[in-house]
Image 1: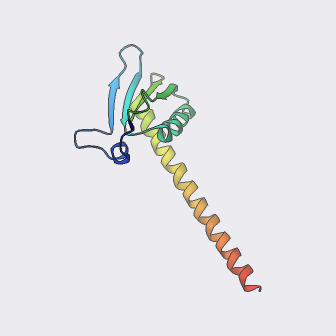
Image 2 (image 1 turned 180 degrees about the horizontal axis):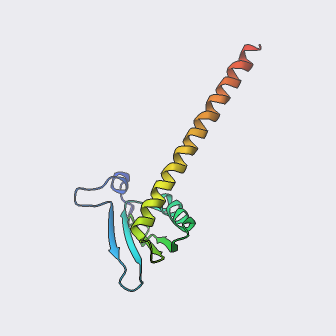
Image 3 (image 1 turned 90 degrees about the horizontal axis):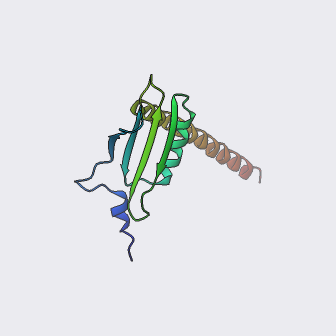
Length: 123
């Protein structure tokens, strides 16, 4: 089979880097980032978060090939800010949203367990 082993798709090898920055020479205030061993699970939420930022003109990603575990992210911003700053803000915002989601989930689970134990005592 042509598909790489699961550990080759997840763990970085010693010679690999997680993210490589490439300045876009054709478009002003734009940059490309190559993320190693990432896919749509990271790409789509990151793109959506970037597009919520009013200073971001364009944000998109693509997977060059299904067997190549690389994601190419392109960001263009309005002049007062830069793509790296927009990316950092988007990552931090996503981290905060996921933390809030995790807290809400834990609350709901605890509330469900309390209801289950209370209804079990009624019998």
